[in-house]
Length: 503
Image 1: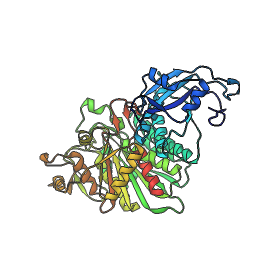
Image 2: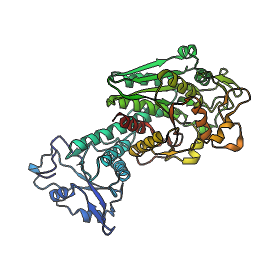
Image 3: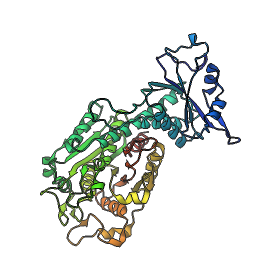
Image 4: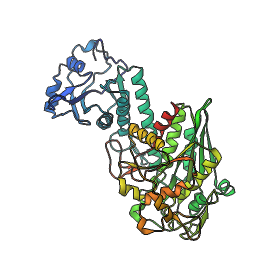
């Protein structure tokens, strides 16, 4: 916004953003950040006075929007249409967390505007700029609109324009865009209602998203193939639905791939009634999101392949609808999984671990990955333990656990490591089968832990991690960076991890 600094001649701008931080010395008042001096000089503004009048403290996410006067020397300013608004945006201490929150606040404040311009510097690291961009784009996400005519309410801003972008900033902005796009794709898939979204529809979305990406092959296996190949657990879960199950495989094999193959597996229950162990009405309402694990894996795999990571990976999506009919599987049934393990069923609402059992065993045997990670909206127990801010992480390797925790911190998908308690394993013993899919010992509790122990059986000695996202994958109330409903949790985390693995 000065002759030797900011300049934009690419069209109409609706708002200029100036970032403010708390005064570090006194803790009182605000400290204008980079770009503020140019805006103040151009518009002859006293930003400190405006901040005082707006009671702006510079804390992360605090936003004030004020009208701008005409710019001095507008004839030579270079704008097709001069901005009419100034957005004062608090960035707190400039940490990654504060910048993500600030970005989310800007995304909300900019709703209904066309283009918003600001400096890319932000006084932050590349990681901070990436978090800011991610927050802004996630807050701009809108749930699918299936009504007639135009969606009610305010649409998100059309463009965020960053000035003073060097090569490092450009990479950070691009990384933030990829991360947010993956999360928003996962949200969109999970938000589609289940009268539209059945296993076939979700498989078709995988084919659509993967089409035309170099070195990525998408294969959809139908129910006949599943029967021929012994996917007894997946077929049992899907047997009560008029929509047959599917197994989707995304195989990414770039030339000169570095390192061993890694595998991602996502639970894809496109709607969960609970089966014959039927859920209460209120518990069933949000079950269109019970394929959130598959959505996260699909979105991350496509984004990673599009970005050209050099690590070979395979993503596997077991898809089924857990419905109620005369052909539903029953409590008391003994089901044979793909690897021959017999499973006693005690609760048909514990279906996610069943479809994962087949997918994990098959993936380990056929693709022989060095590492396998599964993601699932698996248990209500994890929500009781961790709430909705963190997902549960179970891992057989400290190194893998640290990598995933780090990727979660970088992406905003936070994990908390949980124990694989060896003493609880005996509670999965069955008098009639190799395993029971739920604990048969009521006093053991730890439902998320025993579910993880059940899944561990199907990966053998392969390095493995399980992400239980039942709490973090859905939010019952709108947040700064997410509307009510599916959060897309896990997509950005897996993308970050695959990117790190590729470096």
